[in-house]
Image (cartoon, rainbow, N blue to C red; front, side, top):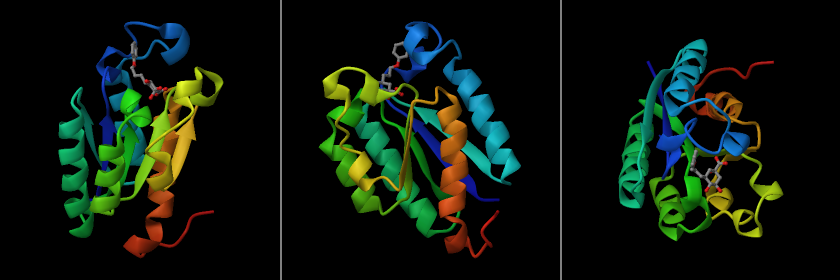
Length: 158
Ligand code: CA2
Protein backbone atom coordinates (compact mmCIF):
# COMPACT_ATOMS: atom_id res chain seq x y z
CA UNK A 1 0.00 0.00 0.00
CA UNK A 2 1.32 3.47 -0.89
CA UNK A 3 2.15 5.91 1.91
CA UNK A 4 1.72 9.65 2.37
CA UNK A 5 4.32 11.41 4.52
CA UNK A 6 3.11 14.34 6.63
CA UNK A 7 5.89 16.49 8.08
CA UNK A 8 5.50 19.17 10.74
CA UNK A 9 8.15 21.73 11.59
CA UNK A 10 9.23 23.61 14.70
CA UNK A 11 6.82 24.20 17.58
CA UNK A 12 3.90 22.39 15.96
CA UNK A 13 4.15 19.91 18.84
CA UNK A 14 2.57 22.75 20.87
CA UNK A 15 -0.59 22.74 18.77
CA UNK A 16 -3.75 22.91 20.87
CA UNK A 17 -1.88 23.97 24.01
CA UNK A 18 -1.27 27.68 23.21
CA UNK A 19 -2.54 30.39 20.86
CA UNK A 20 -5.93 28.73 20.24
CA UNK A 21 -7.19 31.92 18.60
CA UNK A 22 -4.70 31.45 15.77
CA UNK A 23 -4.12 27.70 15.59
CA UNK A 24 -7.30 26.24 17.14
CA UNK A 25 -7.72 23.79 19.98
CA UNK A 26 -6.87 20.52 18.28
CA UNK A 27 -3.58 18.92 19.21
CA UNK A 28 -1.01 17.43 16.86
CA UNK A 29 -2.24 13.99 17.95
CA UNK A 30 -5.75 15.04 16.81
CA UNK A 31 -4.30 16.16 13.47
CA UNK A 32 -2.52 12.83 13.10
CA UNK A 33 -5.83 10.99 13.64
CA UNK A 34 -7.56 13.19 11.02
CA UNK A 35 -4.74 12.54 8.56
CA UNK A 36 -4.87 8.79 9.21
CA UNK A 37 -8.63 8.74 8.49
CA UNK A 38 -8.16 10.77 5.30
CA UNK A 39 -5.24 8.65 4.10
CA UNK A 40 -7.34 5.55 4.71
CA UNK A 41 -10.16 6.94 2.55
CA UNK A 42 -7.69 7.07 -0.34
CA UNK A 43 -6.25 3.64 0.37
CA UNK A 44 -3.02 5.14 1.72
CA UNK A 45 -0.88 4.48 4.78
CA UNK A 46 0.12 7.50 6.87
CA UNK A 47 3.63 8.35 8.06
CA UNK A 48 3.26 11.38 10.36
CA UNK A 49 6.27 13.16 11.90
CA UNK A 50 7.22 16.39 13.70
CA UNK A 51 10.63 17.90 14.34
CA UNK A 52 11.97 21.09 15.87
CA UNK A 53 15.18 20.64 13.84
CA UNK A 54 15.70 21.91 10.30
CA UNK A 55 18.30 19.24 9.48
CA UNK A 56 16.00 16.42 10.53
CA UNK A 57 13.26 17.75 8.24
CA UNK A 58 15.80 17.93 5.40
CA UNK A 59 16.85 14.31 6.05
CA UNK A 60 13.19 13.25 5.94
CA UNK A 61 12.56 15.08 2.64
CA UNK A 62 15.60 13.40 1.09
CA UNK A 63 14.35 10.05 2.41
CA UNK A 64 10.93 10.79 0.89
CA UNK A 65 12.54 11.52 -2.48
CA UNK A 66 14.07 8.03 -2.53
CA UNK A 67 10.82 6.44 -1.30
CA UNK A 68 8.80 8.21 -4.01
CA UNK A 69 11.27 7.05 -6.68
CA UNK A 70 10.95 3.51 -5.36
CA UNK A 71 7.16 3.79 -5.63
CA UNK A 72 6.31 3.34 -1.96
CA UNK A 73 5.43 6.97 -1.09
CA UNK A 74 3.25 9.39 -3.04
CA UNK A 75 4.85 12.57 -1.70
CA UNK A 76 4.91 14.93 1.26
CA UNK A 77 2.42 17.19 3.00
CA UNK A 78 4.62 19.75 4.75
CA UNK A 79 3.85 22.36 7.36
CA UNK A 80 7.32 23.84 7.79
CA UNK A 81 6.27 26.15 10.66
CA UNK A 82 8.41 29.26 10.90
CA UNK A 83 11.05 27.63 8.65
CA UNK A 84 8.66 28.52 5.84
CA UNK A 85 9.91 32.08 6.07
CA UNK A 86 13.61 31.43 6.61
CA UNK A 87 14.80 28.15 5.12
CA UNK A 88 16.56 28.17 1.78
CA UNK A 89 17.90 24.77 2.88
CA UNK A 90 14.40 23.26 2.93
CA UNK A 91 13.71 24.84 -0.47
CA UNK A 92 16.88 23.21 -1.84
CA UNK A 93 16.03 19.87 -0.23
CA UNK A 94 12.66 19.77 -1.99
CA UNK A 95 14.24 20.68 -5.32
CA UNK A 96 17.04 18.15 -4.85
CA UNK A 97 14.77 15.31 -3.75
CA UNK A 98 12.39 15.89 -6.66
CA UNK A 99 9.52 15.00 -4.38
CA UNK A 100 6.00 16.38 -4.74
CA UNK A 101 5.29 18.58 -1.72
CA UNK A 102 2.03 20.21 -0.73
CA UNK A 103 2.71 23.11 1.65
CA UNK A 104 0.09 23.60 4.34
CA UNK A 105 -0.47 26.37 6.86
CA UNK A 106 -3.12 26.24 9.53
CA UNK A 107 -3.45 30.02 9.73
CA UNK A 108 -3.89 32.43 6.85
CA UNK A 109 -0.29 33.63 6.74
CA UNK A 110 -1.28 36.43 4.32
CA UNK A 111 -3.61 37.99 6.88
CA UNK A 112 -0.93 38.14 9.59
CA UNK A 113 2.43 39.90 9.98
CA UNK A 114 4.20 40.99 6.79
CA UNK A 115 7.13 38.62 7.45
CA UNK A 116 4.80 35.61 7.17
CA UNK A 117 3.84 36.52 3.58
CA UNK A 118 7.06 35.27 2.09
CA UNK A 119 7.61 31.52 1.77
CA UNK A 120 10.83 29.83 0.66
CA UNK A 121 8.75 26.69 0.12
CA UNK A 122 5.93 27.92 -2.14
CA UNK A 123 8.05 28.29 -5.32
CA UNK A 124 8.98 24.60 -5.14
CA UNK A 125 5.66 23.28 -3.81
CA UNK A 126 3.28 21.37 -6.06
CA UNK A 127 0.39 23.07 -4.24
CA UNK A 128 -0.38 25.25 -1.25
CA UNK A 129 -3.22 25.10 1.31
CA UNK A 130 -3.49 28.11 3.60
CA UNK A 131 -5.91 29.31 6.23
CA UNK A 132 -8.36 26.42 6.60
CA UNK A 133 -7.26 25.51 10.11
CA UNK A 134 -6.21 21.92 10.64
CA UNK A 135 -8.68 20.86 7.92
CA UNK A 136 -5.93 22.09 5.59
CA UNK A 137 -4.05 18.83 6.24
CA UNK A 138 -7.05 16.86 4.98
CA UNK A 139 -7.29 19.06 1.88
CA UNK A 140 -3.55 18.76 1.28
CA UNK A 141 -3.61 14.95 1.41
CA UNK A 142 -6.49 14.93 -1.03
CA UNK A 143 -4.68 17.39 -3.33
CA UNK A 144 -1.46 15.38 -3.22
CA UNK A 145 -3.37 12.18 -3.95
CA UNK A 146 -5.09 13.78 -6.96
CA UNK A 147 -2.01 15.38 -8.51
CA UNK A 148 0.04 12.19 -8.20
CA UNK A 149 -2.67 9.86 -9.58
CA UNK A 150 -1.42 9.90 -13.15
CA UNK A 151 2.10 8.94 -12.07
CA UNK A 152 0.57 5.88 -10.37
CA UNK A 153 -1.42 5.06 -13.50
CA UNK A 154 -4.78 5.70 -11.78
CA UNK A 155 -7.63 7.43 -13.62
CA UNK A 156 -8.56 10.92 -12.43
CA UNK A 157 -11.61 11.19 -10.16
CA UNK A 158 -14.62 13.43 -10.79
O1 CA2 B 1 -0.13 28.60 10.16
C1 CA2 B 1 0.76 27.74 10.18
O2 CA2 B 1 0.54 26.55 10.06
C2 CA2 B 1 2.22 28.16 10.41
O3 CA2 B 1 3.04 27.34 9.58
C3 CA2 B 1 2.51 27.92 11.86
C4 CA2 B 1 3.89 28.43 12.28
C5 CA2 B 1 4.10 29.88 11.84
O4 CA2 B 1 5.41 30.28 12.15
C6 CA2 B 1 3.85 30.05 10.37
O5 CA2 B 1 4.01 31.42 10.04
C7 CA2 B 1 2.45 29.60 10.00
C8 CA2 B 1 4.03 28.34 13.80
C9 CA2 B 1 4.01 26.94 14.32
C10 CA2 B 1 4.00 26.97 15.80
O6 CA2 B 1 2.74 26.50 16.21
C11 CA2 B 1 2.31 26.78 17.46
C12 CA2 B 1 1.12 26.22 17.83
C13 CA2 B 1 0.61 26.48 19.06
C14 CA2 B 1 1.28 27.31 19.95
C15 CA2 B 1 2.48 27.87 19.58
C16 CA2 B 1 3.00 27.60 18.34
